[in-house]
Picture 1 (tube, one colour):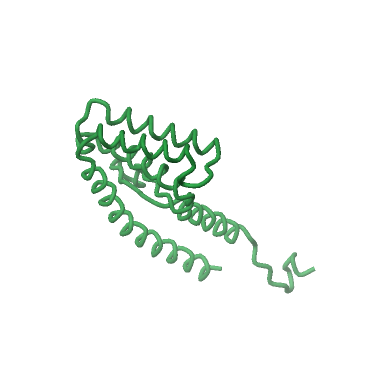
Picture 2: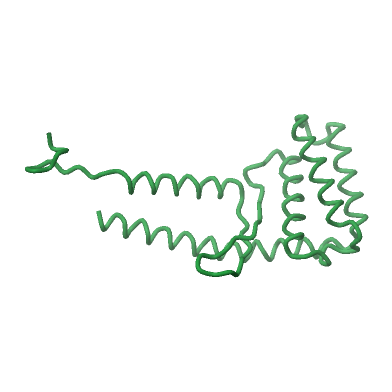
Length: 169
């Protein structure tokens, strides 16, 4: 039982360190995307053009609910960039929102929601400092599934039949 708990803890530490390394790369990618938006008005116009092509069916059939999500993401991007010439002028939290909205548009148009990256600021245990964590939807689902499975394994009682053991009956 102790070996299993130790192995589970070690595995969790290894996975979290590899995710942290990947997150720093993705955080840099999100900042690079923000830096690539040198003209906010032209960027919003480009999104409008992409939405029009989506309505015309150029990207294939897109469900009405997804079209609504596209429009909401477009509106969020326009609101965030309103009054700014470049995306780098935004606060880091706003850049994360911009990045998430942009990734949502890309994933809907490509019909590839599981590979959509979502960034959020998370608090470190024992610290007030937040860090940016960027994971794909599939990675988030896998992390939640692994946590559920680990909790279920830890709650499961190992039954060893023998004298004085109630599960041996």
